[in-house]
Image (cartoon, rainbow, N blue to C red; front, side):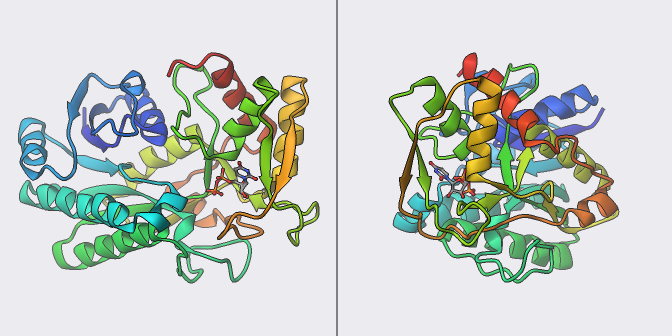
Length: 323
Ligand code: UDP
């Protein structure tokens, strides 16, 4: 049974990946500083409270467990905050990753799957976005992730590190059985906020812009179910011996903000209070992926292609949150 180290394994995508890997017979070891992760989301028998700034503790973890591969989710991910406090983002995300890589190389561990993002592309030059689309991020969060992609590439060339950077589009939904889910504080993501507006009718969802150049005037995004992301991580781990590079993870389907709201209303049978407000800075009109590379290289096909099914799982969670 292979030991996989999940850095940030108590977070949203990390915890769903732990669940998937455990189900498939992997031995999961989680490290997390629990700044944004949740104790209740820990789905593995082995957990160590470690911050990536603590090189000694990191080394101890690698000494204690015989790690085969690392999956690295740990990052600060609030775009707006990254503009105001870039230092926090570059230190935590970039320096934290450098420390992790140092500990890995010191212990001769050379396989890593990294959580990257479509935010590394910046303003789209064309749609759908493939992996050769130019990368020109428009905020420090996206730049911190792009820097890590480049570091992984250089370490691959120089030290034979095997890596796959997975560029997520909009992660959404929750575990189908409702035992783990999405819980950010503060919450900034559209789907949980729409469902929360439906529950607390006095807090309308603020729609950021209704005059975009899209069919209904609202932004279009590619919402990918978190369990599909989790499966992709497993496939990526299993591919590391034969492939290193960057892969988009999206459904290839674009859904507008208004379509999300209508689907949520249909699922819940309730109306969603809506307030139209100004555009949010740095929000492109449309972002959706081609996922041909994920299909070809990983053999990955998303199971959730219907936004209503994705929102249904989020609704199950929202009605019975554990954390
Ligand atoms: N959005 C919105 N109101 C909100 C949060 C998000 O209108 O309160 C829109 C946002 O402009 C974007 C889409 O919903 O077009 C998804 O935003 P989210 O923050 O969930 O993810 P992002 O695309 O920023 O990663």
